[in-house]
Length: 218
Ligand SMILES: [Fe+2]
Ligand SMILES: [Fe+2]
Image (cartoon, rainbow, N blue to C red; front, side, top):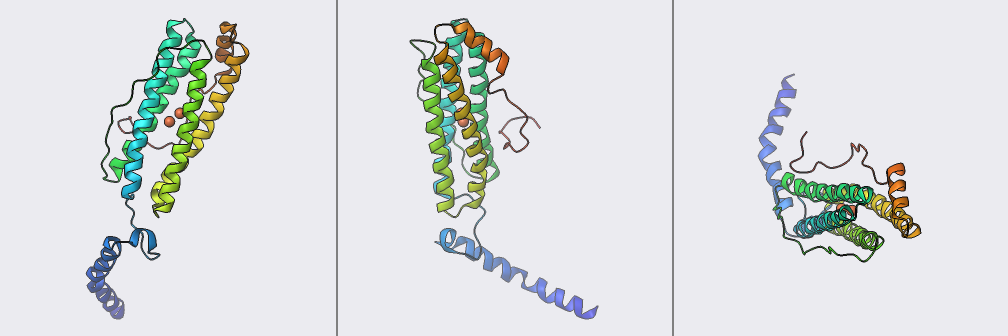
């Protein structure tokens, strides 16, 4: 027992040394990418800057989907309007999940202004075409963020991006399905409405793996 306390005492005496050793590793330049001993848990500066840009892209997607929803609502196509109102809320959630990640990591989260969305459309198909193009672009941005995190040795951020990669695959698939439906029935918009009422395309389901959006209850 005595020797146990002795050993523990020696160990405790050494704690400040150990702390200093790890702080030194974290603070030394180049340790983020090259050290194999101790990697920081903080997101890299480059990732934080890129994620802040992405928050802007997600809010821009939100605004664009609200604009599309309002356009369909004005055309008395309530199912299409409902689809895009809901999609808009998902984009807002994506932005707020990224904000929460930065808040949790004690990093600056900057809520940006966004460019005005397109509000006029020639036919029933073009808003969905625009939306699919947007989702494909966001997929590239999300993959780029994951690649940047890996390149920076920032494994927490790389893991954070995994949910968004999966989400983008689903969103591109859903929007591609909708584009096929609206193209097929563009002269009979009520067929599109019936399809959406029946199939519940893109309907939100509980996802316990989803990151927490800042400001959301619970
Ligand atoms: Fe998104
Ligand atoms: Fe999306």
